[in-house]
Image (cartoon, rainbow over all chains, first blue to last red):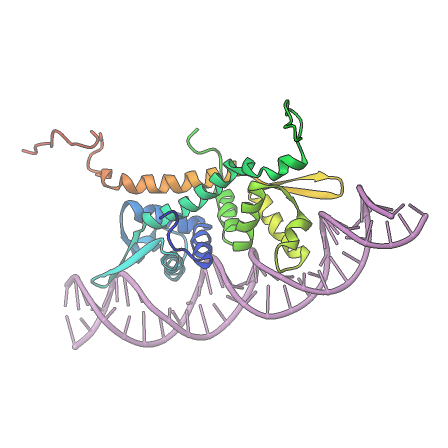
Amino acid sequence: MVVDELSQADVDRIFHALADATRRDIVRRTLTQEASVSELARAYDMSFAAVQKHVAVLEGAGLVSKHSRGRERIVRGDAAQIARARALLAQLEELWRSRFSRLDAVLADPGPGVPDPPAHP
Amino acid sequence: MVVDELSQADVDRIFHALADATRRDIVRRTLTQEASVSELARAYDMSFAAVQKHVAVLEGAGLVSKHSRGRERIVRGDAAQIARARALLAQLEELWRSRFSRLDAVLADPGPGVPDPPAHP
DNA sequence: GTAACGTACAACCAAATGGTTGTAGATGAG
DNA sequence: CTCATCTACAACCATTTGGTTGTACGTTAC
């Protein structure tokens, strides 16, 4: 599979979730070591509820998952979802590398530096 | 340089700019072939001003650049900025792959393999 | 059992977002 | 010159976002 099934709305959610420094830090942290929501909340200068909301945004984007452990909710970063986002960007770059394959532009505009224009009888 | 100088606010802008399907499409389009703002505007079901705003967001994030050509403003996608965003995601993934190397007890990290576990008498 | 902890969720608020319309300035075409 | 085109930008509006506080509930510790 080149890019697995991600709707535009899914991609919207992923990039939106990554467009916040606190959320990126939560992903970074929970990728290396899972943590409870309150452990995360202690790390940032905002209320518990605010951190809870950030985690919810990340979870909605599939960038972290939560599971229960006693009374705690353990948050774990999902590297696979990040890999999907990276693949999307790689696709864009690939599109750029192949930008000259649009040959119909050549017909209208031979451009400078074309030493040997094709003769057409 | 591993990651060139991008402030957190820069990264915020890049991912926020990518968190919209119309904007991603503009990037896709202008990566393969540059286009004027009005050419772009014709492609979407919204006002010229709305497209103009999207282009401004992309430009603020460094994902496209604009230059004048007569009375037109030509928009061109910037693959280098996309590469930077991709590198950030790659960094996160790398962090994940090395998540077991965090043995903070091991101050002088001997690296993977741990050939000689310390004896404690 | 009771108290403390961890979480969920609602209600509220200021600011940002994404769209609109309208106006005005440059530039190219006839 | 005159007119149409392309762009910039302001003003406005509904919705979303990112934060707050407060309340309620399940779980662990004592």
